[in-house]
Image (tube, rainbow, N blue to C red; front, side, top):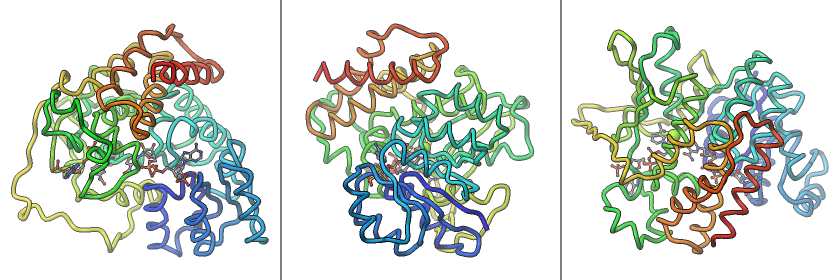
Length: 380
Ligand code: NDP
Ligand code: NDP
Ligand code: MG
């Protein structure tokens, strides 16, 4: 029986993680979880999973839940997230929270030698060097949940990182794939969030449309697989059937395929190195699909991807600024305060305005993050 703590239980990845736990009640027990503000869903999760510890964002919300569920421990805020992350009974932390708030709890959980299943890519983008260094020092496994990185991790089994020629991350193109830059000028929040195939959180849906999601994933891949940026490629693949590939030195390419369903990479991170059945997942029927398509990436059309490569290569505090400016700009776009193309404009301006720090510690990461958010607010 594996005990799980789950940060971000009420989100898209969080609820799909709970689906996986439900499929295997004899394998997993949810010991602790965190939510932000969604108390209704938190109540349902408490009733269904009977955890021991629950964290919410606000103190008042904590008091409300406390009075309703006297047998359970509650906590709140940033400190609460960390308490969930390091919960003493948990073997595995699933980090499915959104944004760089996930960084410090993750570092603490690594110090406590928890295995980490990581969906929260912003944590790796904002301070990949600190996270990887801590994981190495503590002998902790960081298991990718993001589907591209799970694909690479799966393709890497039985192989060695040193045999890799390059990583090829696939990208569907997001909700505006077929629009020109002209047409992007006036796109609305509703259009960007219209995602009929499946639903992800609002922030990552916008990141997919701007291609910043793929940019963040390039940086995430750089850290998870110690791969120089020159050896990470992005390829448009609109069907999202090949989730990513590795090309090896001898020119052989290994890809991982499947129907698009995040429960598959979530479950793999939880069962690794084993695999369990996932009866409700759709099987891949390639004969029915017939054709797969691939197109080279256009860096002028998808400016955010170029910004992410540049920030990644510059290193130091630049990815922190890229991520924080993106979080702030996407939030402003979702609130209707800026246009879609202003997202990339503000990120670029924040990167230009920033004084590069070569090897930032946690305090410098936090101040670079805060400074970038403040700078973006000043532009709005
Ligand atoms: P959602 O927006 O759906 O969920 C975010 C979760 O984090 C919710 O539980 C939310 O709580 C909580 N949360 C948000 N802000 C805070 C905060 N400041 N403090 C505490 N908790 C907070 O996001 P997703 O599930 O889509 O994404 C989560 C992470 O996984 C992201 O890093 C994303 O990039 C990554 N990811 C997502 C994929 C997907 O398919 N969705 C695919 C690959 C990676 P509440 O709702 O209760 O307020
Ligand atoms: P998106 O999530 O933006 O798109 C993925 C799929 O959604 C594509 O098949 C695309 O189909 C479809 N789609 C997107 N927008 C629309 C739309 N407006 N109308 C109709 N269909 C739409 O792509 P990303 O590659 O950026 O992936 C984002 C995140 O989702 C990643 O972080 C990844 O981890 C996760 N993901 C997970 C998968 C999995 O479970 N294995 C598979 C794919 C993504 P089409 O191009 O044909 O329109
Ligand atoms: Mg992904």
